[in-house]
Length: 133
Length: 150
Image (cartoon, rainbow over all chains, first blue to last red; front, side, top):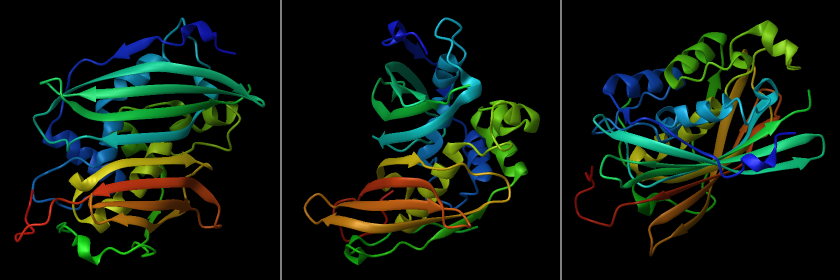
């Protein structure tokens, strides 16, 4: 069981520079290639510009989540504005809960993404399930 | 390549089904998603590691399935900027070779706020839910004579 004293720990990404190539690579990978009038990232691209916050959590040696047994259980996003090439987005993720349920551990991670003017871009909440080894 | 064209809010009605979207998931697509997203967790890429972690083999990223649900909604909206929220549970694993189908239904429509709520589910080729309790919310721009708001 992960130590609950890590609840409240937060992680911040470096500014993520959104490029046309990065958006197009994501669109090709998921197969969502419809063309908007102006190139706009699919909203779930939030996982790309925010990814380093997740990565920092998963690799935090002190928190030591059992990532080999971690699966994504639930995800929530809200989108405050579209994301386009040229955006610089910084995401902060915060470990907000660790709960035991049955044979599993539930880890809640809440994220806020903001642009270069410090205006909100998107919010996310991920629930990870850690299965028993 | 398809050009998206914004749906007319007046054409939306509660109970309406969205055009479903089916995707055939492959090892290549999972690798491509890992590259594009940065998520190189070996449970998605390394067959023997995935088995040692108690999985049947490599599994697709949950976020790939959610991206399919996202696409079904934004293809229907015809405009990625209208989507305001997306939520759901990863109810089952998706493995290479699966055919997953996204389905959606308009749950409600508010003429005042011009908001539409859509219920979503993704099932595999056996009819098992792999993504459930899905909800998307969209907000249409204020009514105007031109429909070409960016």
